[in-house]
Length: 140
Image (cartoon, rainbow, N blue to C red; front, side, top):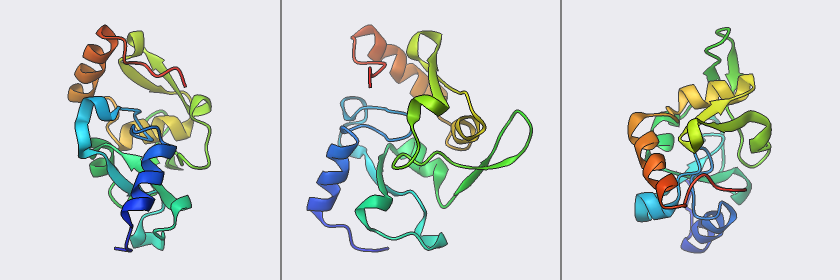
């Protein structure tokens, strides 16, 4: 694994507003457990340069692992996963069920939501509680 300095970790965290680049779970919910994700995994030639790094919650990062693609549950196609550095979030995802569910609205969004288990019951429950206190869903 390429070395990632504390300064670089902090810049990545700031870039993603201290929340998961995939499911948008805030550090307020998971505490200091947010992790650095290689968007293109090192196993596939990805580097530890800032442009290939994102902040991820343990749930999304654990499910993503070394995946670059996922299966679109609508048609079974093998689709590249959402790239939080290059793709526009609102083009691929929307909030459903009062902000507790992430709905993929494109093949990329659907494949990513499925591959990363973005609607895992534990995440949905955390979002539900966050909605109650006004922390979720993020406006941007």
